Length: 164
Image (cartoon, rainbow, N blue to C red; front, side):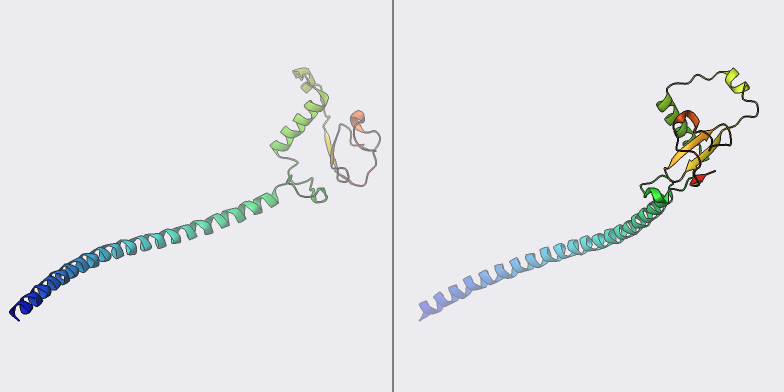
C-alpha cells in the first residue's frame, strides 16, 4: 500500500505542477489580453476622433459644393438652354469684349489699326444690339439697324426681338 500511496503522491505532484504551469500561462494571457484591450480602446478612440473630423470635412465639402453650384447657376454663359439667355448680364465685362474681338478677328482675319484710325472717329460710336431670337450680337455704326444689316452677315433687319 505504501507503493500505491507513493504512486498517487507522485501523480498529485505532477498534476499540481501542470496546474501551476496552467495558472502561470493563464496569468500571462490575461496580461496580454489587458495590453491588447488597452491598445484596441486607444485605436477605437482615435478612429472616433477621425470620424468626427471627417464628418466636419464632409459637411464643409457639401457646403462648398452647394455654394459652387449656386455660383455656376448664376454664370451668364453656362450650359442652360438658350431660351434663358440674358444678354444684359455680362455684356459690359472685359471678358465679353475680349471674346467679341477674338470672334471678329477669327471671322474676318487680322486688322491693322493705327493712330489715324482712332483719330478719324469724330463722334461716331458702335451700337450693340442683341437679337434674342437668334442669339446674335449685332454691331452697327448707325442707330438705324433696320435699314441694312451691317457687313451683310446679320439677320433680316426689323426685328422686335432685338435688345438695344
